[in-house]
Image (cartoon, rainbow, N blue to C red; front, side, top):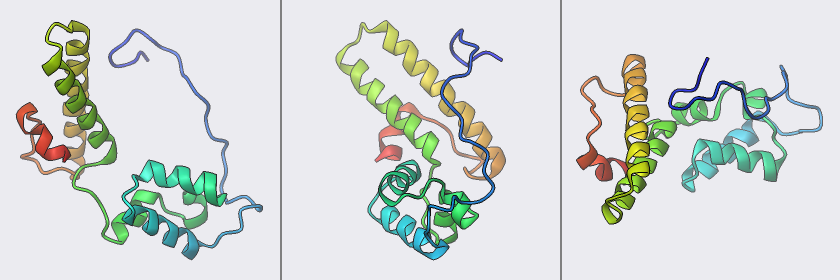
Length: 151
């Protein structure tokens, strides 16, 4: 199947090997991993960044294999969650930077198109999250209120 906004059809990158339990060389307990996740979340790191820090600095290759839950599930169980999902927030930050860029460079038609594509992805994700109940049914993307939502 083709990509959403480009002509490419291939797969890129590598995939993680199938594993059902944590490797033997990673000797961390479930409690220690949860404490680290909560610590890094309180420092303001995103879930993706928490996973990277745990992998690189604490030799925990996969939090889900150790704890049985994803990082987002650990945070929501401890009632530490943001108002918007992380992938949607990243897209909204990108749209905001494109809007700022277009304010200074009005004739940049290529980035105007990229802003349209980014906003299309935001609306598509919003439809998905409204169906899942992660966003209220009345939520709508508005370009003029984007700065308030991101900050």
